[in-house]
Length: 445
Image 1 (cartoon, helix red, strand yellow):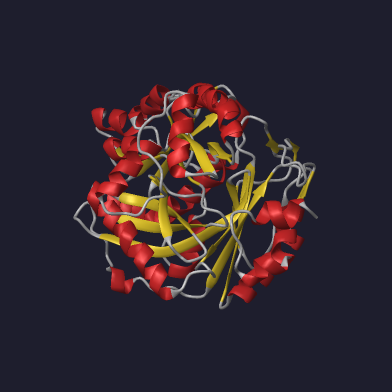
Image 2 (tube, rainbow, N blue to C red; image 1 turned 90 degrees about the vertical axis):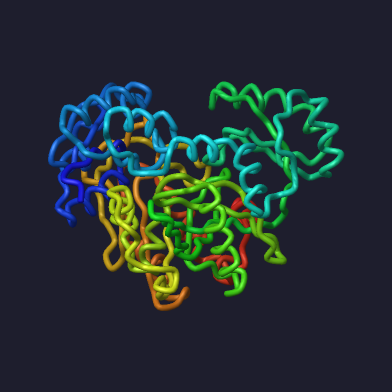
């Protein structure tokens, strides 16, 4: 196993990775910005190095500085976490050039899956169902209008390089498409450095369900069941659970097998997630593939008993998976709530100093919080994840509800009231909720 790795991230995921490294006896190297000098991940690491100024472009996105620190500290491997540089294909390229192991898939796969157009083409070639639409770049609004006539309204206008809920917009009429095309194309170019746009049919009242995969370098790939991720605000997940209360066992198995089929067609290695949209008839369509560890991976860990970070490290070190698909069991039900430093009504970020902190007991909480810590405006506003496991879904919901009531983060606003509202909602309790749930059930109240 590796003796030392660098963790090219911050916040709760850096802390999460360090915990597994400590368990395995692996030394860790942290990087930090000027704003994170006193952060928990810096205190936990065996070594920590300043990588730049407070803004991500100056620090956590400074690829060459990160490589320089990895070389200086003799780190054998780099774990990118999620976000930041985790899906930048230049990262594994530079690691390979410097003889450092990148804990993730190859640059070719990251590049292909990072383009929504290219990923659609790859999935069609692998006989994976995709949402009806086109697989070519649309240059003009006029071209978009002609294609829209073939697909039919409503439809989604999407940026090929989009992600994290950014770069997509629902189009219900030709008039809205005409008005929105150029502005969306320009925004995609400015935000992602890629203005390629495409259209696909809008799946109304869909479920957002993803399959967790592990694939070693010896040709073995398994799926670790699914996660229901349909509670979203601004197209970003806020509550995830496993297993999905909507799926039947037949659909669950079919989705897992299709996800494995997709990974094998790509030659995928390490941890990855295939995301699907599932309609009310349980037809499922490929949405995207995330070539990294997901924020919501803990719910899978809770129902399978597997440490996904440990599995990532073992795979990157060249080990075979120690289990087969038949060995992957699931136990009980797990639900995760993402805690954001934001106004629960407007969803606007709420930076500031934490003046009093009470963390819940009897649940898992992945976080980087301490009393008197300042939540800065420079980074993603997610500050913690609260994960509850129960023998039944009802038990997991109750435990999570109690934990959120117990959680106190004074000095800043958080979305905890909204999360509690979700857990108390009858539609959520029924388990038959879709991606429109927050807008339909909560915003109107």
